[in-house]
Image (cartoon, rainbow, N blue to C red; front, side, top):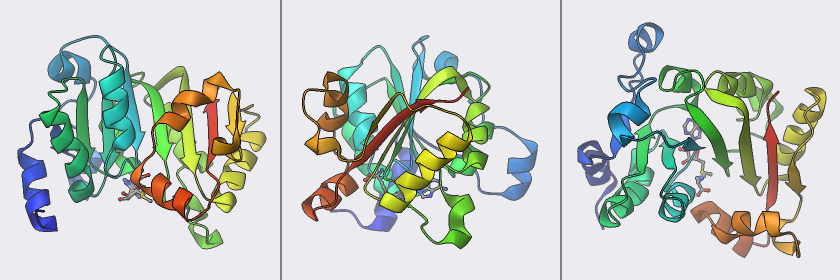
Length: 226
Ligand SMILES: C[S@@+](CC[C@H](N)C(=O)[O-])C[C@H]1O[C@@H](n2cnc3c(N)ncnc32)[C@H](O)[C@@H]1O
């Protein structure tokens, strides 16, 4: 198994992997080179682009890309040693509809242009349960407003988490914003006879497996921003 450092280096060389600079000056002054051109210059098609943020090893990104060859998928995380797993697997599987970007969620409006993204998956983000870290939660209204900058109107956002505090917080945020979830479950794997949830159950991320084994119930919510 390669070391963390070897994974960082290998990720930089993968043809399906990118990094967007942390340098403040660049962030304030320039967009990523593929901004607004992901389909034209990287995927070479006009398929919808779906992103997974805080993707870790990228299980959702890879599995959805294998299932839906007529959609494009991009995993995003700031830890490239984790994404190395999904990026390497995608190369081995010869998937052309996938990419990984090492960057912070906070910078995504410099990576994607208006209406460039069709759907967002947020899978087991750090729940940031301390009140003082509320603004870091990836469903804070500040982040939802951020996603709106590149998500198509009525683009769907999916959230999966094990954390009650974070999940209830998200539901409250949606209520405050008068957003009615399209689908919502407080115990996903106890749900039966709901065909709409079958796909959501069919892919488990690395953390999802850990939390499920530890006996936590998995929560899921699907919603659209007005
Ligand atoms: C608990 S892990 C979940 C990983 C994966 N989705 C899973 O379920 O196995 C949370 C991930 O979010 C990433 N992350 C946290 N804050 C982030 C941010 N602001 N921008 C990009 N990635 C972030 C971390 O690097 C970590 O890989």
